[in-house]
Length: 76
Image 1 (cartoon, helix red, strand yellow):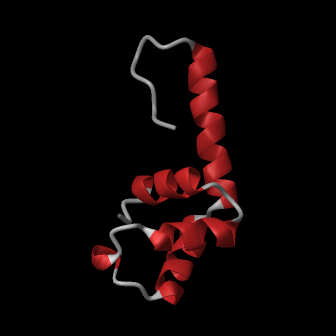
Image 2 (cartoon, helix red, strand yellow; image 1 turned 180 degrees about the vertical axis):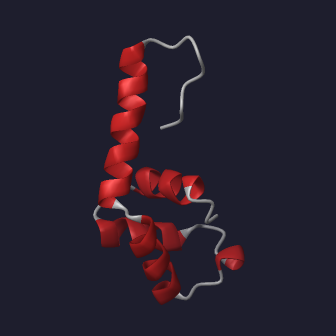
C-alpha cells in the first residue's frame, strides 16, 4: 500500500512493488482520469465519496484499492 521506509526486509519491498505494479496494470492513470471526467461529480461536495465507489466498480477493484490509487496519482 505504502512504500516502506529504509531498513525494511526485501520481501516487504517486493510486496510494495507487486502492489504498485498491479495498481498500474488494473487502474492505468490515463483511464482513471478519463473515467473521472465522465462521472461529472462535484468531488468537493461528494462527502461520502460515491464517485470512488463508481470508479472502483468500473475498474472491478475494491474501493480501498481505488482510493489508494487516486491518492497516489494526486487526484484527490
